[in-house]
Image 1 (cartoon, rainbow, N blue to C red):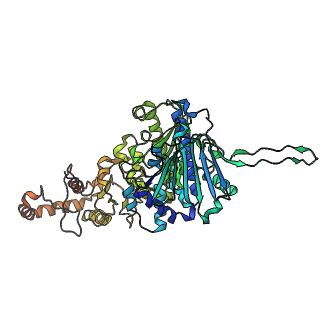
Image 2 (cartoon, rainbow, N blue to C red):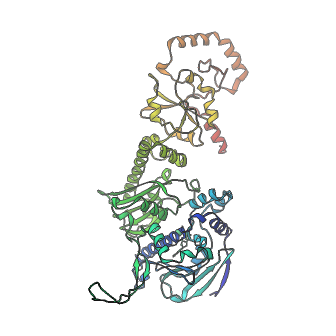
Image 3 (cartoon, helix red, strand yellow):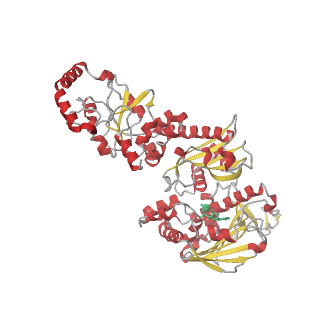
Length: 569
Ligand code: ADP
Ligand code: MG
């Protein structure tokens, strides 16, 4: 096997390193959170693999991570006894970024440090954040179940390349040594490290330990002899799985930090719900709504889903079977008491327990959003600006919850003078005119086109509100959402407005007379347009515009035709 080799970082890693060092300087201490978070993940993975192969513990099942500093040398060391990495694993995980769409992500960066640091936050800073404070990083690791001689040492100065070398490492797991930059030496201090751990890593479910010096022999208050104590590794955190604790004992800060650990996000979440469900199936869910849409929300291959635990044992990341696709922005975890420990993705896909949990979790998220919309409209607007578009996929995807999802949607409307989506269907119904039976809407390419459409003229004159839809997905949405609270949705571009009682009698008679009087004109127009239209009618729905094109009942709307054409149909 190769002894020492030098490898170049993948281009994106180089970019990420550059960006991180230049845009995350105001929050340097997060490197420790990331490295401890990785150590905890490595412990989870070892436990999972040991379910089927107990030998992986090598007689040491007390998983923990140890943090220490050497002031003289200017180093900080983070050492775990988790799953470790093989040589190939090291080259792959610490030399590349294995996320789909990574290159595309980097092409979106602007060069403006403040904006970019936000983006990097959403991308996830991870292991490479070590270079925010370190001029050199050494990783010594040995994978569980491999011989001591199969250890690997990875080293890099965080510029273009890294080296890997075979070493002998007796203890299983990963030891990371940070050689601090001269101006970051303050981190080589136990007190400082301890305070960072308490701030960011209290929720970590394995012990995060630091060395505590022993005390020499001393005398008590009454002159009695107190024996010397030996130094020992001491836990700095609670070291219990956060979601198993009582809600009332968990602070907002802990929930926030835990979110960052499970989501690999960098900003605080918008809100969360933590619930223990009993009854037919027993499980705990801790669900978070991020405050920012991830950069790959629209990437079909992006990982999504919840972290799955079974009886507190980590089973897998990104379990996508527990959440419908229109709620794919939800992060968090579930811990089931009913699923078998050896459950696989395939089993999950077609499983009664999964289905029941999925339905429960879906309802939980919907009620979480309903509550937010009701109690904090401003925060809900924030949520909606990030994820409203995704939510609109809901009525087509989730028939059972169609009405509830529709209730969560927000639109622009002729009731407001702005394109901001603030009107709910419920509000629309409350404002409906007496005798009005339908929810009128128009779909157009842009807010401007919708708001100034000649189709609105008559309705505006009559003071009837119209929902203005101008998102790409809206046509798809209204195809699956025909009614809300027993009120039909009706497109104003469709043949007959069916105003019902809102049509007044005199107007109707006048219109009929006008139609009769205009017969000759209509005939001429029909002749001219020949086979370009199916019919020509006199209308009263225009007040300023002389003529407009409408689609017939049951025909594809003009917007849908455009969509189909764009799709090459
Ligand atoms: P993420 O944690 O989001 O996967 P990171 O950049 O933090 O991304 O880590 C990259 C990968 O490196 C991890 O997914 C893991 O495979 C590997 N890794 C990092 N730290 C450790 C560790 N302490 N033990 C084992 N593997 C590790
Ligand atoms: Mg990580």
